[in-house]
Amino acid sequence: MAERTEWVERAEWVANGVAMLEIWFGQTAIMACYLIEGESRRAIVDTGTTSSPSQGLVPALARLGRRIEDINLVVNTHGHIDHAWGNGEFKRLAPRATTSLHAADTFLRHPDALARFWHLRRVAAGDVGPEAAAAHAQQLADLAHADPHFPEPDANHAGGDVIDLGGGQVIEVIHTPGHTPGSCSFYVPRAKALLSGDSLTGSAGSGRFPLLSDVVAYRNTVLAVQRLDVEFVGPAHRYPFRPPLGAVETPARRGELARRFLADTLTTALDIEAGAVEAWQSDRHAPRAVMVTEAVRRTGARIGVDLSGNEHARAAAGLWLDAIGGAPSDA
Ligand SMILES: [Zn+2]
Image (cartoon, rainbow, N blue to C red; front, top):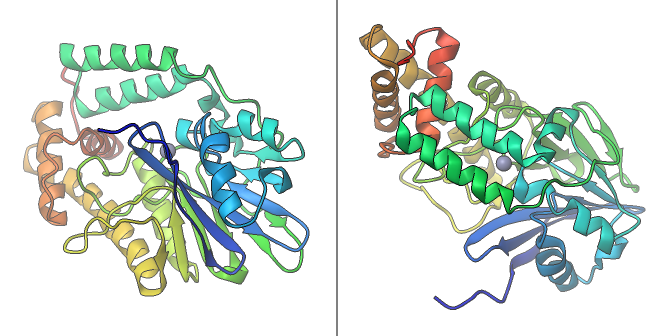
């Protein structure tokens, strides 16, 4: 396979004063940042990984006739490596920009936090054998080569905050935990646009099953956003819809597709819960790993996709079984 040299997939206006910047990082991974413009200030939602500001965002902004040094504000949807770890490099290129992150995600500045999170998910899923331990050790080794952390944010935003960009363009901060504790979505009322990061993860498919740290918080987040008046939903990745629509080749969801994405995300969250409840009811004394496998099978059958072997699905099922108070430990 040829080495990638072009890092911008798309840079386009998607709603009133809102542009989507879909950029590659590494050779095969892709994510979307968003530009929000008011009369007096410009904000960027997420900065990607360490390489993203210079490699992806500078040329993406140039396609729209914008310069990175004219950005005043970085708002991070959450603290994961492909969303906030570009903050330090971004500030070097745009010295006037300030950064903000929800306080509940500041612990993710440290790579160990991510590794610990993965480990806890494996335990929840009952995957505690030698293979899981080896995978965990490998992830720790990989992270040791990653950047040690991203800089402390200049400010913390919280749900209910309103950020004024001038000329009637405002950003409403909505706390949408579940993917991470400090996950936030940014609602731009003038554009009826919801920029959701990884807070809403659509339906389920191979490798795109919701990555969750708290299943109860996620279900409540997904319920709460249904009330919003949306014409555009912009997640950070190309999260799939439920079958038969399935995968789509852009993160952008407009009009009917935006509303369908919110509905599919809700139905899927409820199916994960139902799968766990049904598995628990079918045999309350089954070992944890067996109960998790059964929960994943039932969730997959509800959605219409094969989820066997999907580790995000196993972790979510394990977290739900804990929330129900059901699954015995294998230890
Ligand atoms: Zn994330």
